[in-house]
Each structure stands twice: as C-alpha cells, then as structure tokens.
Image (cartoon, rainbow, N blue to C red; front, top):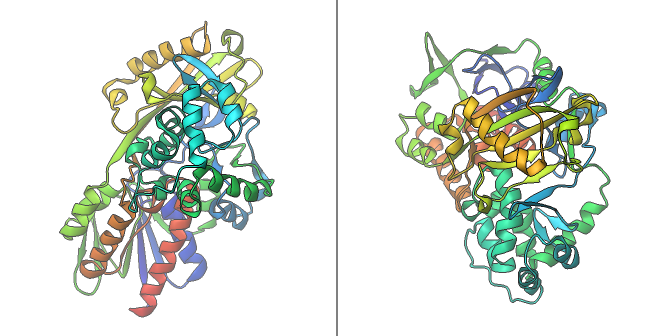
Length: 459
C-alpha cells in the first residue's frame, strides 16, 4: 500500500524535507501543511524602494556545503552573488571601530591588528595572548560560548567582539549558548589544541585554500531560493492557510487534526518552532515538556531608506555590531546598500537595523512608530544622519531564534527518544534542534527525510 508522509511547516527545513522525499521515494504520498498564507518561513523578500529586499536572512554561509549543494541541484548556482564588501565595525564607548584582520567568529588570531584597533584595552590584548601558553583548562562538560572565550581570552574579547558577532547571529547571550551548536568552529578548535588561537589558525589555513566567498545570495533576494524550490516540487500537495491543532497516535496511524479535517499518516515531520511542536504533541507529555523548555528570542528588523547625501558616514563596510554593554536598543546595523549595491540606485541608502535579543524585550513593548523613532535616534548619532527617512518597514520575528543552552544536544536526543517510544513515526526538523541558519536547516531537512524513509521501509 502507498505510504504517506505529512510535513507540518513550510519553511526551508520543511520544504527541503519534502523535496528530498520526492527525490528519493517518488512513490511515497506527501502532504505539506502550512498555517500561514505563504511558504518560506523566515525567508521573505519583498519590495522596498522599488527593489526586492529581504526582510530577514539576506544570504547564506558557504563554509558548510548544504545550501550550496541545494542551489546546484536546483540549477541556481549560476545566479549566486556575493557581498561587495565584507569588513565591519563595532561600536565601543559610542565610537565606531573597524574590526581588525585575523578574527574568526570574533576571536583574534593576530594580536598586533587587535591592539591597533583600540576595541579592547592593551591589558585585554595581553590577556588574550596568554591563550597561547596557558595549560588546557577545559572543564570537561558542555560549555557556553562565553565560558570558552572568557577562560581562554578574557572578558573584553567576550563582551566586545565575540558576543556582538555570535550573539547577533543567534539573537542570544553567548554566556548561555552551547558552543558546540552555536559556534562549532570554536568548539572544534578548542578540543584539538590546548590553545584556541592555534586551533583556529590551523582551520584558517584550510579555509584559505577555498576561494569561494563566505556569503552568497541572489539578486532577487533569498526568496528566489524558495520560489525555485517550490516550483521544483511540481504538483505536490501543499496546503497553506491550514493550521494543525493536534497530533494523535491511534495505534496504527498518526492522526493530524486541522480545523475542519483529520488526516491519517504513517509519518509526520514537524518542521515548526519547538514551542509549536510542544503544543501539537500535548498527548506525549514528556516530549512536549522538553520541547517547551527550549527558549526562543524575538527580534525586530527595521529597514530604513535615506538619501545618500544626508548620511555623513561613508558606509565603507557591511555594517556595525553593537555590544549589549553599550546599552542601546540597536543590536546591529547592516549597511545594505554597501553590502548589496544592486538594492538601490545612486541616490539612496538602505540600512537594516536590528533590535531585540535574549534578555532584551524592549523592542516588543514598542509599536512600529515608536520603535522606528527610537532606532532612528540611535543610528542617526552613530552614522551622522542629517536627513529624514524616505521609507521604512518593520519586520517582527516573534520567538524566531531558539536559544541553545549548554546540553541542548542531549535535550534534543531525549525528545527524539520520547517520540520513538510514545509517538513512533513523528520526526523533528528545523532551527530549534541542531543548527541555525539556512545551510543547517537544509541539512536537517535532508537528514529528517532519510530517517522518515528508513522508518517507512521498516514499518
């Protein structure tokens, strides 16, 4: 008999899962259910100043292969573009300081450029240098990003370089993010060498042999990837505006309850945020409770358009990071029209201003007008902006960034064990589990599809 897989969630992880199942097992019946009117999840490209500009992720990283491999399968590799500029600034005591060369995820591997940058004190540079001679002091258990950096490099490196960068990517506090998941490159380097710096330098030698740009995107925005991926799914049964309310195990099949129907399926793939998965799996109390324990952070991304002549800063980099120690509402400013010159014409500047992270919910308390006014006041001083906004857009991503606390991987393994026992045939995929970012979600989608097909063969 024909076997059925139902995928719940139409973001990149869910779409990738569906695509992989179609490719590997075209005889398997598949259905994708998405609660919202559109597909793509946190990938969204809309028009701003007459150009397609992303409301969330504007690129993916090429250091890992999974998103690039998907683009190649879809015939998109010839359309990929890279940023026009890659340097960046960090705000320190209200002043912009250019990030020095030799940083790897904010960790300095070259001390002289770090000293010249004046981002940290000379004493902090000396403290960072001790990493090269300090004995191995790994605590022997799961560790946070901040824990690793503070013990090897000191507090200023953690607060002014690593936390603004990795914390910005995760909308989190690096003192509470699992290093193995939030920054596996750092974790690998620290395990292979007594010195974190030495481990990162070794990695840099290998990465230097790869001439491919670190970040890749499309002229039509990241939404182009979603559009082509959906087209590749052909006549797949994809149902938007379909909210699932519960998943039940009837002993033989899994029942997926929607607003007006119940669908029977052999396999259910949950490609949703963890808290939504917890609600759908309420009949599996242990897995639901553990899923609910995964915290999420909310962010707001405000896209702002200005006349170029009214922005006094040259915008000669990709943007600026704002450490939480600065106390501002702004967490980062992406200089979109410098990073992606095709976004605008010669007369305009586009900035994307981020607010909100774990432990900072001030942006949630402000309506759109007040949020824009507050952020505009801050960035006008930082970038010496003398004119008025000519266009703005607020994109709110509520509970969009899962926070990987130390031990997160063990937690996810326990959830999967609970499901195998109480809800066999239910699989999890997406950013909440084993990796943020587009490539990680593509990888997890493929792995989940393979696991689901293996389950069907054994059933």
